[in-house]
Amino acid sequence: MDDIQDFVGKLVVKNDTKIILLVMDGLGGAPNLGGMTELEAANTLNLDMLAKASDLGLSVPVLPGITPGSGPGHLGIFGYDPIKHQIGRGILEALGIGIAVSEKDVVARGNFATFDGETVLDRRAGRPATEENVKACQLINSKIKEIEGVKVQVFPGVEHRFVLKLTGDGLADNLTDADPQKDGEKMLYTTSVNEESRKTAEIVNKFIKQVSTILKNNGKITGCLLRGFSKHPVMPKFPQIYKMRSAAIATYPMYRGLAKLVGMDVLEVPHVDDEAGSLQSEVKVLKDNYDKYDFFYFHVKHTDSYGEDSNFLAKVDVIEIVDRAIPQIMSLKPDVLAVTGDHSTPSLVGGHSWHPVPLLIHSKYSRYGLAEKFSEKTCATGSIGTIEAKNIMTLLMANAMRLEKYGA
Image 1 (cartoon, rainbow, N blue to C red):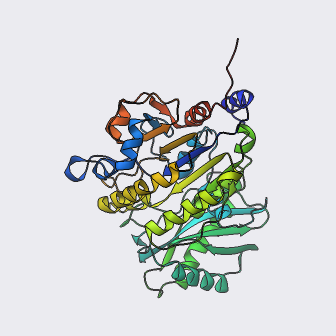
Image 2 (cartoon, rainbow, N blue to C red):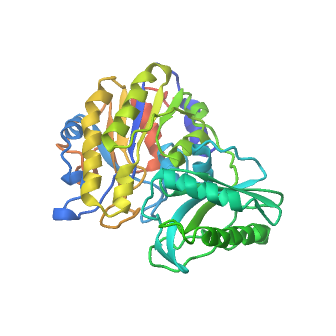
């Protein structure tokens, strides 16, 4: 356990208060269309009203200038030190879709991609329908059973994502990503960081090449990329640290996996294709389970997806859909509502960025009246200031009166 978590855990007191942490993935932006960020351009009547009655600030996910992945971004807002707890994306994706991971396993997050020879044309293969993903995984599993005595399995995720699971003796996870991270670049194979991982790297690269052969005539899905190689880590558990019955409401596997990893109960959300319907499905799960838990992590994905696609207007639309759901969430009368992101994903950048993330904390103890709107600019001048994301949880606990005084 982190020293800070150990310290905070000793100050925690139990009560009946409710906390909702609403995470719009990749919420933060940078001035783009019309010189505005997506949050500034969005029509957010309800969030703006909430901002007038809330503390505002900005959070830094890891360190100033460091662009975080979603794993470190979320660990920070859950109160973990994202530098100390380095977790491969593979384990999060695997746990998120219900894959059992043992000490003999190494897992990785996969992207189906479109290739032209050794050049990656599209890292996400046009974001195929999940049904196409399932068919590709079935084909791979029918052709590849093991490599060098190591059992090989792939499991479909959502759209272009899948999980690779290797099972055998002597496997290690200290590997570089087999992903150039940009379209138009030559394929980048994995390398072992140490001798212990050399065998695993060789198996992974053989797998990638075999998949390219199997999928070469498979439409846009003609190969794969792999990153986030990981074994199962040992993590201090969120419910034990903060002494709260804790639940996660998320639709994407990685975020469900991250919540499982830190010990939250992951609630099932019925699948709905359209954006507004999907959010309403999550809101219904929140309402149906509200009496059962003290803390809710409520995740919205596509603010991040559209930012990565450089689709400014689509990201604005998602923010507006979330805004329309705010009255339903507030009707539950949570003692504390926080609205933030795990990192920034400006459509201007077309990916994650280093920009500090907007943060809103609402409770009856808020120092309100300093802002008229929820935006990057108003958050920059808010009463919270700019803080490290790992300190958000102590603010939520304090606003819920769940921390006793420190010292005499």
